[in-house]
Image 1 (tube, one colour):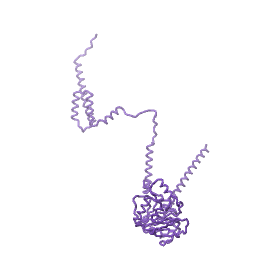
Image 2 (cartoon, rainbow, N blue to C red):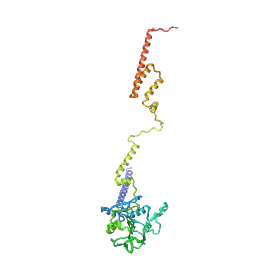
Image 3 (cartoon, rainbow, N blue to C red):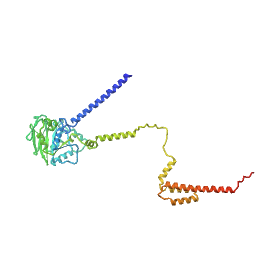
Image 4 (cartoon, one colour):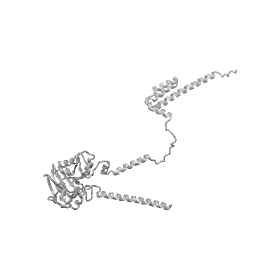
Length: 407
């Protein structure tokens, strides 16, 4: 028996140890993923690994001269682009689509004097010539006109040319020198006269720029120069300053990467540090539910076979009926009327009643008036009864007792 108990205890210990280890290492992995930021998509400003843009975001914010922000939700109210820069990095020209709201945002941004920077992914398009998955999914459900990034750039007067062979791993420019480790395989061809070539990768146009309305549009064939790895190891400060162009604000677009923010209770709680308040409210609610469902005193078992109906007596029912139908100020008059109709009051009682009605004031309560009237009527009745007994005694004294006659 002892061996059996020991084996059972050992099994429980092993089970709890495994659960604890699983929980511990799971939390460690989750914390590691949150710290490194690899849970976010590539070229996101939240991501802290080599393929993220968090280093550039924090570097610009640390200067104290540039206001840095992220765009995480679409809005019908289009923000002005005056003296602002909008960075759209990690764009896959054939695998991602552009919504109508984003197209209107870009046009409004450029029209109001903003600078728009679009950087393509450095990976080759593995599905070139095929229909993008996102477009196929939207065609089955929506009847709206969708546009890909390739078609949007074509509307701006440029074509994206992809190649599998890389002739050079650097991009050279007369404005900011050489950008090392240029990994892009996309270039821009068939440019309209409005475009200016800023940097070349071999004989391929790697960076182009054009004036658009009151703003400027910049196309980058590679997003690597903006990444954390490039900022840390292969940083070209002149190139980054040229991109910012002495603007006061830089906004990083995140919605095209699948990141969005929907304001709600949890979002506001996380923003203003109200997690403890929400936990306290939930704990209080659980205690209230527990208090309503359970009690510290043992409950008595009710007899299910006894068919008892809780009710009230006839007297209580009559009192409830009186309280609902007769007001307090009319109660004494109703009592007097009922007494005069159900009994035969004497002349003395009627005289006392009339005197009581003349002397009784409305400021007294019905209980005081009832007690006073009862005392007055009882005194009259007792006096009448005493007088009647006295008359009977007098008559009996005057008439001597006579025995009944015998037959």
